[in-house]
Image (tube, rainbow, N blue to C red; front, side, top):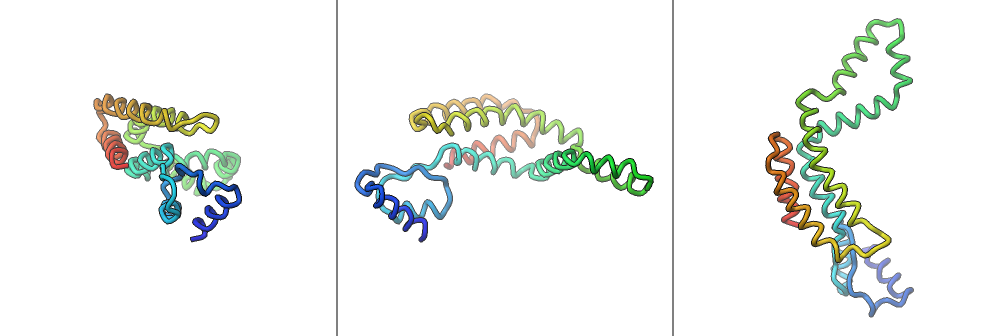
Length: 178
């Protein structure tokens, strides 16, 4: 593959062929294969990337709600256009735009999901920032941080929203598999 050849070339240019202990990579199939085919060093997957994959898998459960929130943000970003439409003389435009606005706004039930999910996901954000450091070594802190995160997830078992509880379980299960 091109990735494998590029890595080999760089190792040769930098005279590192015999100095490699490990490679830290994302979880992409192409890079996994290239490092495996290279046959030197141990492949260590980026913990922040791996954690993000688990979070993404859990959030697939509410992809419609996330899409709705993203669309609302885009729509609010175009507020000048919205003013033009809403203040036009055409009653049909106002009715149509009212329907569009209504479809963008999360329902009470969806707001409840968001309210329960945001505090749960804040710990993941903090951990991801910590283990994504570029000015310090992260490998030595990953295990204790992830164990702390898992313990915190386990303590959050009192989530009374079935959808959020399901997301939590999917993330936890995926983290255990990785």
